Amino acid sequence: MLVRDAMSTVVLTIGPTHTLRQAAALMSARRIGAAVVHDPDAGGIGILTERDILNSVGLGQNPDHEHAHDHTTNDVVFAAPEWTLEEAARAMAHGGFRHLIVLDRGEPAGIVSVRDIIRCWAPARQHVPA
Image (cartoon, rainbow, N blue to C red):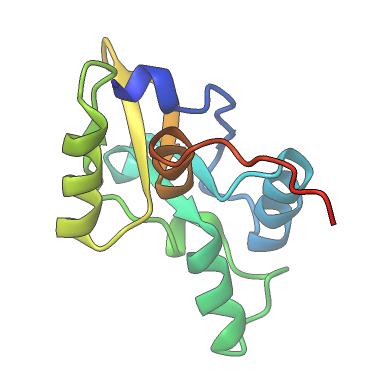
């Protein structure tokens, strides 16, 4: 199975000046765990994850004053839609992260997460009568 078969095509793109609270609200509303941060001044495309927001709040930082660009990972490993899920899982395990931005012709086409991969690899849940 390929990344294109598992990835979410719901890609939230935010700017570098979004506050962490704004980013969290947008991510929560879409029920997603990561946002693409488009920041031409910092190299283009980065990623802000729920863990980045959690770490900031855990340090006592104010999510209304902290901006995405200060918490964005800019050294991003990107996946291609043609990657196998094994390649994506290997990249995640090697890099210690749970989300990969999927680029198609240089543009974000989706995000694949560990959860997406597990959904593809694990059998569908079956309702077991009580």
